[in-house]
Image (cartoon, rainbow, N blue to C red; front, side, top):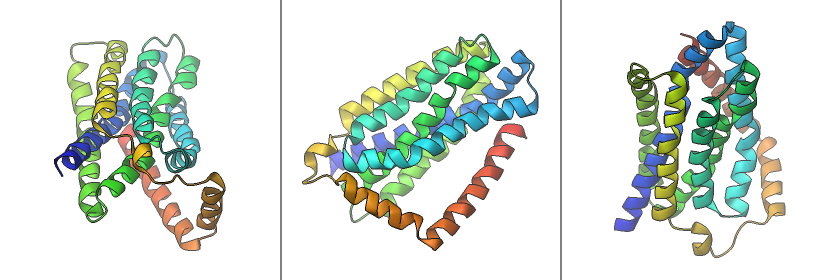
Length: 231
C-alpha cells in the first residue's frame, strides 16, 4: 500500500511536469513572437506544430503502452522530450528553426497520458477515480506553476536562458519516474497483441457516441488553447 502511494505521488508529479512545460509556453511564445517580429498567424503556426505533433502521437502512444508495456520508459521519455525541445529552441537562430524543433513539446505531452493513466488503473483497480483525480490534480498544479514561475524567472533571465534552464526539471523527473515507478511490463501476465489492439481500435472509430464526445472535447480544447495563448 505504501509503494502504491509513492507511485501515485510520482505519476501525479510527472503529470505536473508535463503540464508545466505546456503552459510555460503561454509566456515564452509571446517572447518568441516579439524577438522574431512574428505576426499572430506565424505565432499561431508554432502552437499548431505543437498540437499537430501531439495529435499524431496520441493514438500510437496508447498502442505502445498496451502492446509493449514499457510504461515506465515511455513516461520518462515524455518528460525528457519537452525539456530537450525547450533546450534546443533556446538556441534557435530563426523562426523556421523554432518550427522544426518545437514539436518535441507536443510529443512529450501526448506520450505521457496513456502509460500514466493505465499504470494508475492497474495499481488502483478498486479506486481508479481516486487515483485519476490525483493525477488530474497534478495537471492543474502544472497549469498554474508553468506560467507563474516562468513569468517570475523572466524578470531575471532572458527567454532563451529560461528555456535552457528548463532541461533540468525534465531530467530530474524522468530519473525519479525510472527509480520509483515499477516496470509494469514485468508484472503483467501477458501483453496485448498488436492485431488484438488494431481490431479494438477499429471498433472505437466506428462508435458514434465516442466520435461525438471526442468532437466536443476538440471544440473545448480549441477554445481553451486560443484563450490561453492569445488572450
